[in-house]
Length: 372
Image (cartoon, rainbow, N blue to C red; front, top):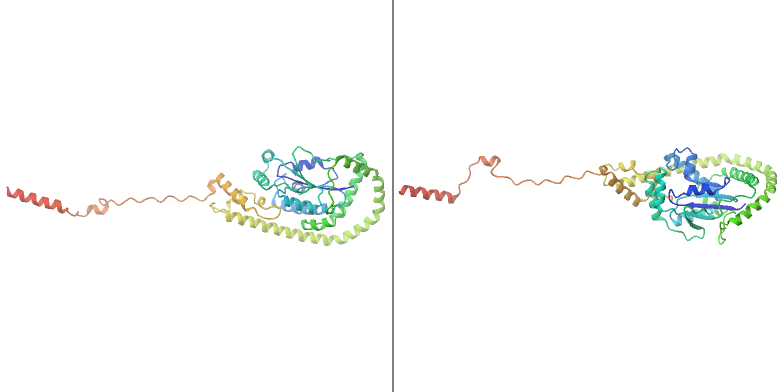
């Protein structure tokens, strides 16, 4: 069997999960954060409790590490990854043979999100994805219309019963061996270099070709009987390997526990950093902690761990526009004091100073009257 790793990217509600579900075979490996969260008990399909989301991210890192160690089989890894450099790094770390971007227009994605009852902030996340999205120059990447199936998938075997049994047996044996090793996102880059199934530098990745895939499946069916015999021969070696794995299991569990503790610490530090950033930017709010109840703080942390302060500013402004009562009260305009009226209050009871002209006129009039 050949090795294929398909990295599927796109904005929320683009149809990534649906595309993978309709294209992947039952024996394929699928790494999807929403699916993992539901496996861990999340009550929602796209909105998960913080503690479940953190566990799901750790499980995703471990499963992606297993994908890098695959030598045969097909894996589908679902990410958003709007930035082309991020997609290139993910593809290199996973040893991807193909990168598919589900380029659902923002308007259609927002409509789908609303119809599916996704959180209100999903529309903002979709718009932010499209603002960041740029096509990559990588030869592995191609942009896919929402209704266009990925070329060469799904692949149906010539002999379904025999192939399914053989492939499932190999997949189960491979998975059982690899689960003991664990792994994290940091392990992905190192293990990719040693992966014999990944495309080497200067060697073109095998493109999706339906006819070629059918030929390879047919050849695999012919080798199925030989493969089963070989598996029986390897059973004693597998038992010995199992003993060694059990001996190393305690160390692996201890390391996995330490990794989980560190990731929890990192998650708490990031959450505090986002809260601090939101409060520092909430200058126009009466209570700077109010926005925390109305915004999805986790959405401001990118997959690279950076905080999107520009988006926080935009969302705070939009929140204040929707809920103006959360803002600071505007100060009342200072009233102008009227000029004092000297004829009122205590001044009205004081004797008034006589006008000299009026006093002189009275004097003259008195003298004239006496002279008559």
